[in-house]
Image 1: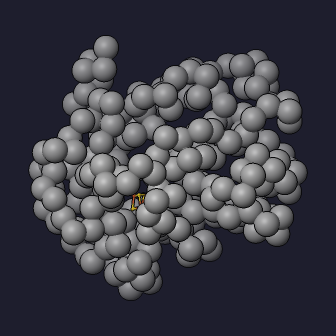
Image 2: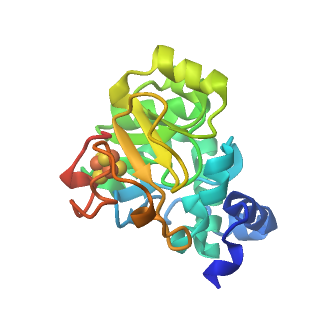
Image 3: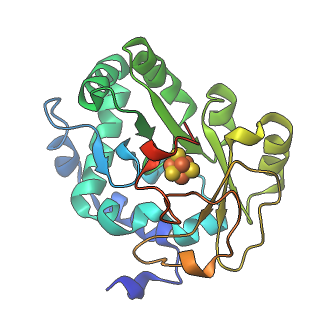
Length: 230
Ligand code: SF4
């Protein structure tokens, strides 16, 4: 039942599930003819990765959206592990496959999980093959090599990361995750995400802000109708 996991680290539950997946399950999902991208009601399509690379803040771990809904299903977790492995094996082949599956649509990178600095090769191959991508990171090392990503902060972001964002990230590339108990973003941001999810149904408890994501507030049907984060 959804409520059983509320109030605990959702991130911890998802990581535990990832670690319970056997090698046989992962290799059984790694043939190149299986889909790489995932359907995403909000973003259209996304490349969903495991949480292995996440360095979550306390707030992010508490309300982790990849630990809720369809992304938490075992098949989705296995797929994220398998896709990550294919990317590591051959980023150029993975990029060609991803661009082909996207069919001209913008790809939300890391619909779950995190982008690593080493994913730069994959994203450059996607660019080379005519694909387009967008996404978010909480990792300073990743943002330094992929500055087109949005940088996500929240009320528990460590000071060194906040200092990096203040000094290096333009406002149009800044995002803020807001829980009901949090104030407005500590820095100017382009978009605020009221916490939402099948377990963390807090949208109506988060005060409204002019920078709120319009999809979460029900003002657009999907990112394709907004594109502020592209
Ligand atoms: S602000 Fe716009 S582009 Fe960004 S996540 Fe929300 S709907 Fe999508």
